[in-house]
Amino acid sequence: QVRLVESGGGLAQPGGSLGLSCAASGVISSIDVMGWYRQAPGKERELVARATRGGLTIYADSVKGRFTISRDNVKKTVYLQMNSLKPEDTAVYYCYGFLWRDYWGQGTQVTVSS
View (cartoon, one colour):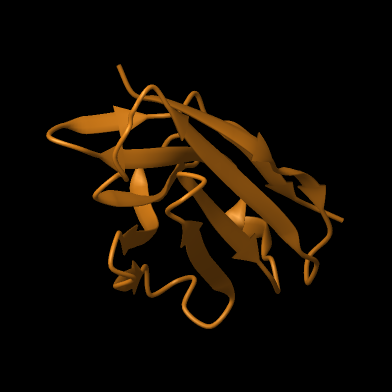
């Protein structure tokens, strides 16, 4: 059973930076797709960024140029560097993985406020 464990997040001021990481366990092979989704209060969960095992990435338009996703296939870990944070980035961020089926982390809170 694949397990995704997030770390990072917390509180940042507008314009600041935060980093998230998510490590996968319970799997021998590399995860096909790893990424991040987020859900703000009263809103649906939305894609932030995803990266394939081969390095192809996609980003939500709202985070392009500000967020960077990367992954270490050996460590089975995906990272999200978030720069130039805005209050509208406030949400619970969920790690996502796909290997034959979807897997989700427990979520970590990111709050952007002055």
